[in-house]
Image 1 (cartoon, rainbow, N blue to C red):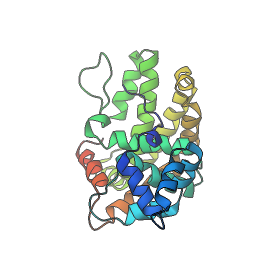
Image 2: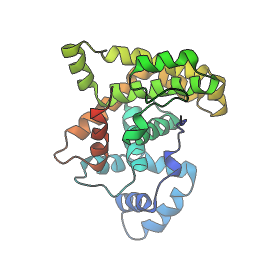
Image 3: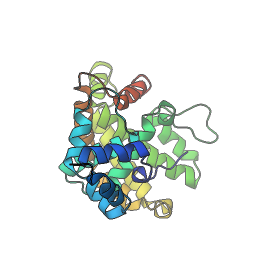
Image 4: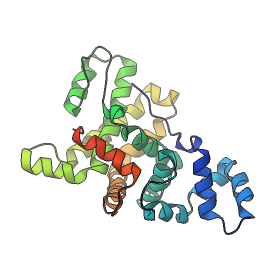
Length: 241
């Protein structure tokens, strides 16, 4: 099982840099200067917080000329700040989680020694009983990610399934996400991967993080022409549990 890391900001492409520079430049002379500033970590982060980038991404119609890493980082950073979650590494982690989960095969939970995939939270919890130390850490983190992804991106689907078929409601996913992020953050491997503060924040502020992703989901589904990113997320809808 892969351990997700907050590394969107080090995976930007040349097209991403061009998009940032073309969006924020006021003239041809600004391009080289902005490109130089983006090479510095501190000034890069300040530039990425510019609201102009967020609005350009949200208002664009059709296929965006940017990577998922830039798209999700800028959007997630913006909405998390609005709910009071200011830490950039938390935004980077959540953005990378969305990048991973926007690929259908990455939403599947596979555990050594377990046949097939674990698609339901109760299956993942059952697998914890026989999991070794590292697998237990990865499962806890995955349950937290899985819960945040579903409750954040597909809350209406969760509510519909809860009302019509008796499936768990949003509060169930909030409880699962909070508890498992907290236990993942307490695990010794969280320190090794430098994830303990991120997991603690997501546990303490799971509700706010979920509301922030609800905002992202509503904005994307409201567009007349879905972006490439929401198209990829919709692929998972048929398989999300």
